[in-house]
Length: 437
RNA sequence: GGACGGAUGGCAGAGCGGUUGAAUGCGACGGUCUUGAAAACCGUUAGGCGGGUAACCCCCGUCUCGGGGGUUCGAAUCCCCCUCCGUCCUCCA
Image 1: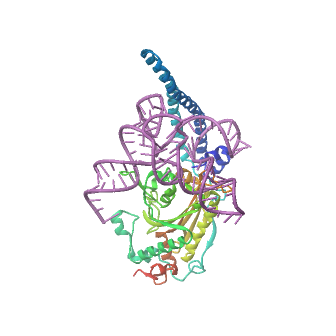
Image 2: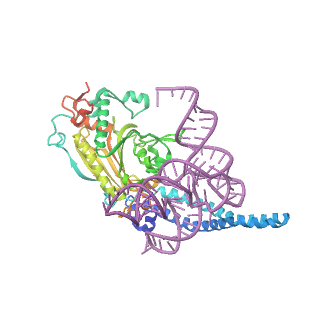
Image 3: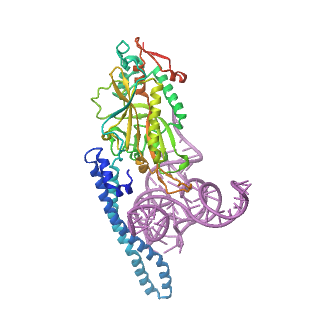
C-alpha cells in the first residue's frame, strides 16, 4: 500500500513512476485519487452531523430533569419531543454514512490494486551487474574436458520423482539418503552463518489466513500460485516471507529495537499454475520445497543499505559454496507488486549451459508494512519520541534448498559422476562426497 | 469436539449505561535537585481519518476499549455473532 499523503502531494511523480511498471498502471492510481476525492467530500458532512448529534445527546439529561415539574401527560409529550429532536441528526448521519461506506470500500479495494512505486534505480530491463565465477571449471576456456551430467543423473535414486508422482502428482520428489544429510547440513550452516549477521532463526507457521497474504502483497495478485484450504479458510504459504512479515503486524516497534532480522526456515508451496509446459525437470520447479529466507524490519532511511547487505550475504553464501553466479538488477516491469527493487542471483548450471535463478532479494520499502500496520516510533535529534511511522521491510533468499542442491551437484560433479561437497558444509554433517551409484 | 473465564493505551491493570479517550502503576520524554549519576519530587505521554495549513508546530472535528452487528437520545459498560487467548474435560503426533 502506498502512502496516500505522498500520493496527494505529488500525484504526477507517482503516476510517472508507476507507468514504468507498464502501460496503464498509472490509471489505477487515478482511480484511487478519484475515490479519495469523493470520500473526502462526504466525510466532513457525516462528521458534522455526528457532532451535532453528540451535542444534543448531552443536553438530553438536563432537559429531562426539567420535566419533573410538569404534569405527567404533558411531560410524556415533551419527552417524546426531546427524544425526536435528539435523534434527528443521528438518523441523518446514518444514511450519509451508508453512502460513505460504499465509497470507502471501493477506495480500499482500489488502493490494494496499486503496486509499490519502483525505485529509480530499478533497471528498465534485466541487467547483469556482476559476474563471479571463482574460476569455475565450467566457465574457463575449454571446460573440464567431460560432459556435465544433470542433477537427476547425478543423484540417481537419491531423488525419486516417479514414486512421488504416484503419491502426489507431478512436480513432487522424495529426497533420500545423502541428499537429506546435505539439506540438513546446508540449512544448519546457513542458519549459523545468518545468526552471525543478526538474523534470529524462525520456524514459522506455513498455514496462514488471508490477511497475511494481503498484507504481503501476494493477494490480490498471485492467487493462481497459492494453495488454499477452503474448509478452514487457510492458505499454504509460498515463502516464509509471508509469516515473517506478519510477525510484527499491528505493532509499534521501539526504534532502538531496529533493525529486526529473522531467518525463516520452512517448506514452501507453489501451485506453479501456468508452468505446465516448462521444460524444467527434476527438483528445479516443484510444488513443495524447503527454504531459508531472510527478512528484515528497518527504518525506511536504512532500507537501501539493508538491501545491499542482504544481497552481500546471498553472494557470500554462493561464494562459500563455490558456486559461479551473476547478480541481476531485475527489470522494473518484472517486479512483484510489493517490490521497489529486486536483485536475483543466478547460478551457472553446467547441464543447461546457462544461468538460472537461485536466490533473490527485494526491497519492499514501506509497502508491506503499511498493509500490515507494522510501525515504529522514530526519535528526533534530541531523542524525543515522535509519531509512529511505517517501517520498511526487505526479504531475500538465503538458500532455496532444492535449487541449491541442484547447483552443488552440477557444479561440483567429477568425471566419475561423484560430487565433491563444498568444504563449508563438512562440519555441519554433509557427506564429503556424494556418489549415486 | 465439550464446559467455563477472558480480550482495555508502549506494558501491567481499573472501570461495567451519561464531560471516560478512559483511574492507577510501570516505562518513555521534559523539568527541579545534583560536580555527574541514582533516588525523590513536578509535569507531559494512545492511534487512525478529515479539516484549518503548501508543509511543520499547533488547533478543531470525528472514529477507535479484539472484530462485526443490535438495543438506547447516549455503550468500554447491555444483547447477538465471529476471532483469538487462558483453564478444565475429551481426543491426538
